[in-house]
Image (cartoon, rainbow, N blue to C red; front, side, top):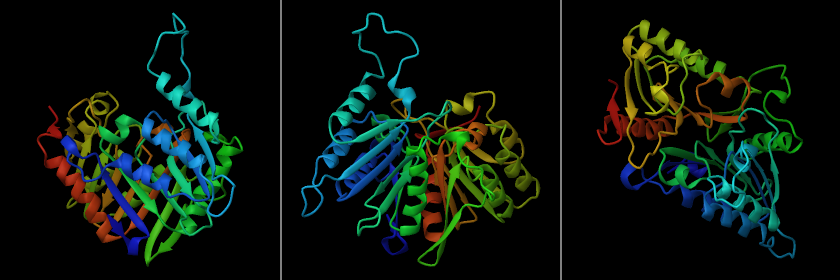
Length: 354
């Protein structure tokens, strides 16, 4: 779906049993295939063979009118390329072999691939395409570049066609390439995110831990007047985000509606009991084929959307490499709020807490 005169695109997946409109694998591959000059990719994991082939294919293409190859650079999470224990026997096929296979394929081509040095989680999911050129754009969201992420889990992808957004993500990518990860990120004199204007609408770009996203989300919740609709994979009651929602509920005349991942919300640290006791309307995901609700998404007051890779946890705020976007636009807000309502109201996709 296109918004802001085509400068912002939003996608929801997967289709099929989950009922969302968009093929997220196709969205990612189409974005990669439209590259002509550069691709800078920061992603937690790649086990989707078609996405891996698309990246390799891009790195083997020439730039328009030249014999110079497209420059493709990748940073990914090292934990998905190693085993904690020796494999016995050594030639036995194990679960992460597919990740290693794709990584080796990319290295054999022209992809300049590196792994992260963050002892916590390298959790980014973004691509910068053709910085400074006509096709300049950034793809990001909650979707890992995996078969599960694109075909079984509920996820979102957004694409920004904006020089300011591209420059912000490029700055983050350059830090990663310099070996600056997680809590080693520069200590900023201000935690304020980059604020941009796109077609008259406010857009903010945030990175964790640089911009302290939890504080930004809490501030937005406390400023909200009418409602908060959200879908969240991991939500821990150790954050202050649940406290902010409870504060709004206690103030009266404020609606909180949310869907939580079934597995994650079964953990003792989930805040759903506290929120339910204060009047929130919550359900848990029950997707077929062991799918997960993997969104990290909240809609406030029918005009503000916050999404991206950031789960509502302490480690995501303090240690992980994460990225978020905030956009104030009623049409974008309605698009995402309708998806929250669809999943919440579906007896196939969600169920009441017991």
